[in-house]
Length: 184
Image (tube, rainbow, N blue to C red; front, side, top):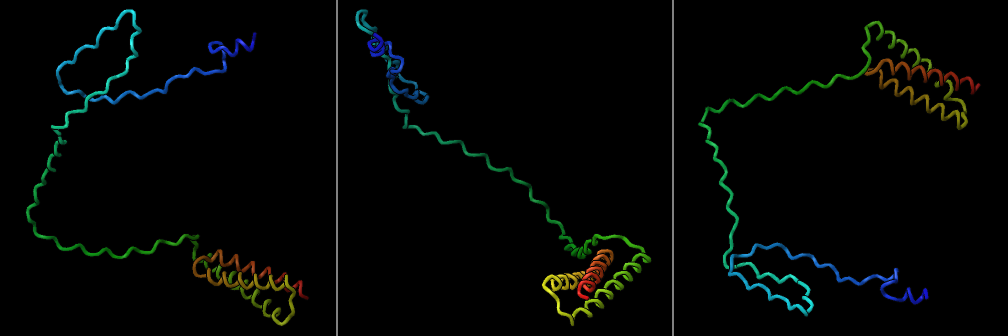
């Protein structure tokens, strides 16, 4: 009984009804004024009424083509009256270089950092001079090279940033003292 019910077309929930694919409505086109057409004939009462399908619309009248209206001409600007040409402007002087960022130090502080840098660099160079004749291991050679880099950086920064130069020189001196102690 169940199979009979499922096989029947009206009772099968798994069977889809076949529906014709939806056709998009025709584009709306303005009809030119034409003679009225005859109304469709009335269906006979005993005959099933036919399915209404939209009639294809006649093509638009192609005899008259309307072009878009041309854009209005641009408004004319009045020409300026001839004036005596002004002297060409003088080129602006080149802008001064931007100020370098750094600490503002008083003359006493500048002298202090200069002295501190020179003392630390002298100590680091003196210790490195003593270590040049010695045989250094790989770790000691890496420390030696690092000290040389710190000395070069301190010398380069001396003209621009005294505080940073003094810091690098002191690092080089401390590392040189540690390296000299490890070699003895």
